[in-house]
Amino acid sequence: MSPPMDTYQRILDSAKELIYAKSYADVGVAAICEKAKVQKGSFYHHFSSKQELTLAVIDAYYTDLKAVLIEQAFNSGLPPLERFAKFAELSIDMQIRLHQQTGHVYGCPLGNLGTEMSTQDEAIRCKLDGKFASLQKLFRATLQEAVDRGDVKGINVDITAQAMLAMFEGCLLLAKTHNDPLILRQLLPAAAQLRL
Image (cartoon, rainbow, N blue to C red; front, side, top):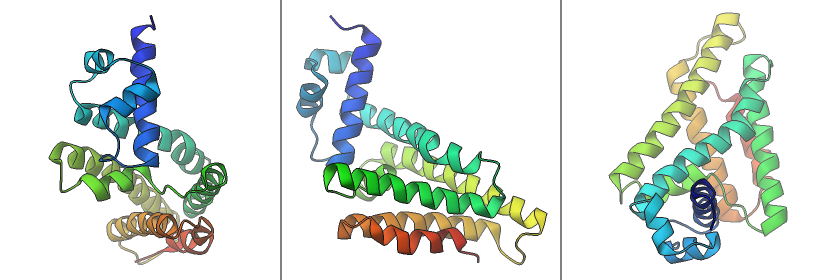
């Protein structure tokens, strides 16, 4: 028998992968259990519902986002405005890699869930809203640092941070819709340079 944490992690990892590749609605508990190689009883030992699992999946997606993109771009020692360009570059590279492996552009896992679930489940919407607020806060702090250094003048850091986040998410949605990660090469650098 697998240790409990191993079982928990396999369920979580299976749900992350399936929901990202498909959607919340297209992935049932049975499919998650099958992929994780666990019985439904094990699933319900760790999660009371698919919703509870999805809330954990959102946290895991954000943890992955921090490790793969945020830490590398925003804790890189680069000047503030160059961090946005690095974030865009890393995002592009990740989507190209995924496309090469799967033949699909999956977009942003948080954005995908937000588009699908924000009108369907308030707990999921609130969790996603919190993650996007954290990312927007990071963008805002980085822009404020650029203003304080004199790198940029005359911008509204709150509106610019929100607009940059919206543009990043929109670019990922377009790339997903077209199933073409190269669209990101054209659009994400513009999102990184947006100033309002």
